[in-house]
Length: 232
Image (cartoon, rainbow, N blue to C red; front, side):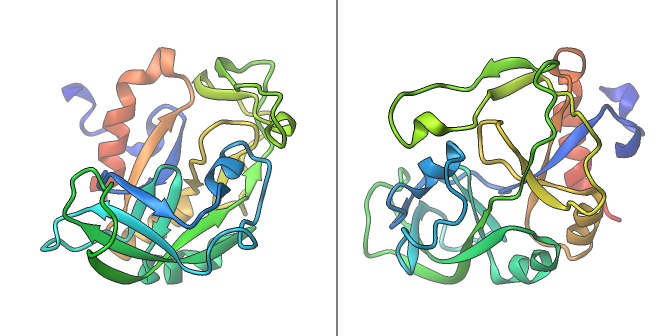
């Protein structure tokens, strides 16, 4: 990859920019009552009517470290008040669900109770999913099917792709979104929102998801590094 070190992100293979946690911490998101599964299968939008009024994410984390501005609980994004303020004007179809963070001494995140509580976070649930995948040209994993309601009505059609083709360009006014029918509740940001968040020096990470893994898989980690190190 040394011969690519000066390549600009804009000139690299087509990719989506995923908002992600800068650190991986094992833990449990409590009080959801099955909401993450409903969202994963894309059979529900808002979940505010089924989750607890105050959620709790119990995770293993060094108490002497500062929590990042986004934590990933599986595919749920837990965001700080700073990130919420920065990102909310860019959002469509979303809700913030108050969530406490409990810092556990247990490295597995399995032992609950008695840990230091950090307030001011919220689960950002966004059901903005763009229906723009060209499934006839899609190659990769196919969505898991089930006969169990309500998941038998799931619109999922694909999992991790080898090649992603879009029927149409991503609209210029879409800044935070998922992909309808694609497994995993990953959320992607526009280049404009990416630049905005980078300028604020928030403790977040951006990961690249290339459109064509068979041809450009070698670039994904390189683009991710470029996205995270870049300053606008």
